[in-house]
Each structure stands twice: as C-alpha cells, then as structure tokens.
Image (cartoon, rainbow, N blue to C red; front, side):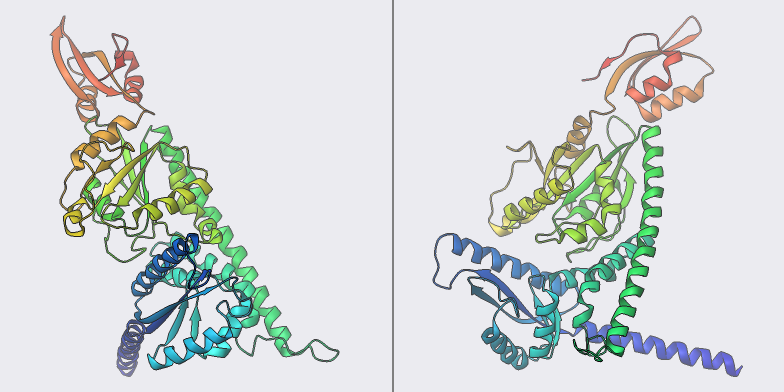
Length: 456
C-alpha cells in the first residue's frame, strides 16, 4: 500500500515537473541576429542581398515560433566579411547584449552556422544561451520525430554537429594548457566524451543502415507488384500535408508550423485508371539547409529517389515563393533528382484573394503545373487526372479478355483494378473489353484475345 502511494506521488511530481518544463519552454524569449555582406548605404546587388537577409531572418522568426519561443527583437548586421571571432564584430556584440538584456531575452538565435570559436566567444560575451540556425532546426526535428527511424536520424545529426564543438562547451570540457605538465582532467574528459560520441555515432549509423535495408525491401516488394509511387516535395509550410490528406483521404497532422511533418507517410492514391498508386508525404525543405543535415536524412529522402513522379508543391499565396522554389530546386539537384518527372502544384489559391497576388489559372499553367486549394478541394479532381496522365511507367491500355462464365475471381479483378467498357457472352464464354494497367494485362495474358493498345 505504501509503495503504491509512493509511486502515485512520484508520478504526480513527474507530471508537474514536465508541465513546468513545457511552460518554461513556451515562454522562452528569443532575440534574432542576421548578417549580410555590404555596407548600410550600398545599392544594387547589395540591396538584393539585404532583402534576402531580411527574408531569411523572417524565416528564422517562424522557426523560433515553431520551436515554442517568443521573438522579442532582432537585428541585421552588415559588413564586408564575417568576423572570424564573433561573426558580427565585437562592437555589434555589445549592442546585442544591451538590447537583449533590455528585452529580457533568454536565448540569442543566429541566422548562420557558427564555428566552434564563434560559439565559444559569443557565449562568453553575451552570457546567454546561443543557438545557430542548424541547432534550431535540430531542436524542432527532435521535438517532432515520432518514428524510430526519425529519432535515429535526428540524434545522428545532433551528434555530428556537436562533435567538433565539444571544446567550446563549458569549463569541464576545455583544455587546461599547452605546456609540459598542463595536460590534466580537462583534456582527458574531452577525449573521453569524444570517444563516447564517436561510438554512439557508429551505433546510430548501423541502426540507420538497417532502416535503409528494410525500406529497400519494401520498395522492392512495391516494384515487384508494379506499384507506382508519387512523392510530395516542396518548401516547408507549403501545405503538403493538407494536400496529402485531401488526395489520399489520410489524417496526417497538418499545421502552419514549419517542419510539422518529419516522418514520411505512405497511403494509397485513388485514380480514375484504378492503377495501384502510392503517394508519400516527406519532410519539407528550407533555404540554407546544411548539407550534413540532408545526408543525415538520406534514409527518409530515398523515398523521393524511388518515386515515379514528384509533385512540387508551392504556396501560391506566399510572396517569397520564387526564392523558395529555387531552394527546393537546389536541394533536388543535390540529391540527383533534377531530371525526375515532376508536376508543379500551386497550392493555397483560396488565399490569393486576400493577399492581392495574381491567381494562377485552374488549368495547366505556363510551367505545366496546376492551381489547387487543398483546404477547399478546388482543382483536386483535375490534379488527379494530371497525375494519372503523367504516370507513364505502367500505362493504361485497352484489351479484350475471354473468361469462363464461372471465373468470377478474374472478372472481379478487372472491375476492381481497371475500367470495364463492355461485356458480352459468346459460346458460353464471357468477352470483356476493358481499360487496364499494362501490369494487370500481363497478369491476365492467358485470357488475352487481342493485342492491347494505349487507352486515350
């Protein structure tokens, strides 16, 4: 009885502690810092870089909000070259310190990847928690990963990022000196932690290799059964998950937060041709996405490599969509997918009336894309037809089959996975004219009575 009451007390205290931690995390106040090359009075190309820096800082603000922080201020520093010691210069660090203290900021977020030296110097000068862009993205990934695969990939990316930065993390991990007799516990502790991290990285890489092997087996089974695959790609917060739910009738969590979807999801996509088509929803892309972060999520992004068609989803209501599309194109090129068949989807056209931006046509646009609204369902039927037409790997053909009157199993298969145009009975045999996928025609080759032609 006593033990049971003690367990209840411990559980209540843990729940109370977790609630306090979540509340503290939500109320964290963040101050943003960006850097752009050029002087304040510069014109021409420098102005374009400054506009990009402001867009990038606005994106950093959205990332901070997605991580649960409250943005209280920010600044953009301009200079010819980034300061190797602090990125923004010692004078600017003093200004940031004064303003961050005045705004009672808890954390300072930098819109660039900081070197270990810059990180150590900034922590010492500001006496606040410092996070750069990659660390912030990893914080969001760690909070959103639900599957075992996603958790392994996030932890691997975190450890690969932390390993070269151990020397700047606190006094216990710092080197004690460079002369004779000065190598003491600090150096030993640093090397000990490095060995532990390297061992953990090897274990994670082995686990991810097993995940990649399992996914490869799943893809092999799909190819053996002639399943076609369609993958949604695009900038984060372009509405991919909402479009995925609308197309496949799924219930994947959709949110306006950046990186709301991290773990890939696969569902059956119904098409008019009734071919076996699978659609997958993947993690969104982002500008300035570090290369090592992309490589850490290679197991997830391999779903794109196996796709027969990519749906590039763009937020038509976002005035920054051109830069976002360029970032997506760059990542697809780095993954070797630039030549993969693609269909451009302009999403969120229902919001264009509010923003005043030009509304893309509901039919095919100049780039061969199509305008839809995943929220209202506008244009989705046309999108399904365009997907059906764009999938040329397993084309739809017309064919005549001759079946026994008692062969209900194969007749049901034709109705279920094809379109039966006509049926008639001749000499106690059932003749069926149908539009079916080429793979289904091959399965029923023994019942084929005429050579197939491509359906129109």
